[in-house]
Image (cartoon, rainbow, N blue to C red; front, side):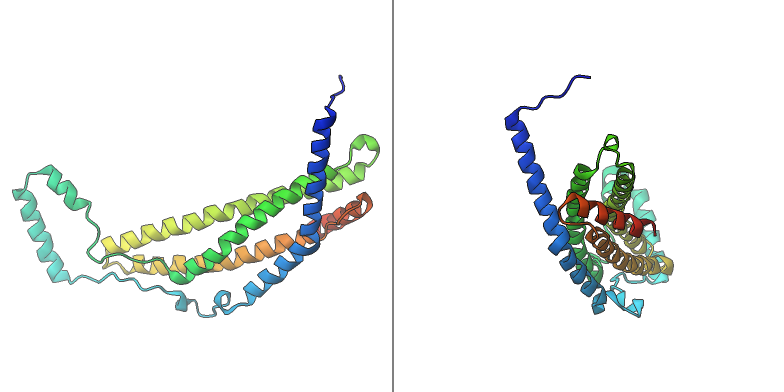
Length: 250
């Protein structure tokens, strides 16, 4: 197999990049990660994430319950009008009109928590990518005789990849909450006499509240797992990676 030749200028740029990446990663592991662990732990202890009575999370649903008698009369008038009005365009416009209750707002308590959570998700994913790249650069070659070091670091890399996938799923989870809540509010507005749809909105809010707390815990724990890695020196790296492996599988 032909030996890959790299121009000295290109190699110098690669070396500078690797050195800069290692410096940034060591700073993250040494100072930034412990700081984030403390901040997220404090966030988890705030009253906003420790609501004992979840009924306090209820957001007002300004959807009036219609009077059955009036609704029946309204329906009869509508049927009569449809018989008289043969204009399909007019009928289409009437069907597109929104419910008479007016706009229904989001659950502000949930939205406030999500506004704090989403930047944390973004940051931890970016930092994890940096640490993952750094780890890949440190994996020794099997032909060097360090088979155990290769196996350990590849296992750690596998665990980090799994964590990255889980963190990426948080964005989808948040979007799914708003989509499902919107559907529930729409059903409650179209059929305001059905109490189950109203209750469904509140159930979705409570479930999202619990998920938010779990997501904050997962982000904090991600920083805790990364903290065990060393800051410089191949010997320190191997020891720290071995320690991280034992924590992960323990």
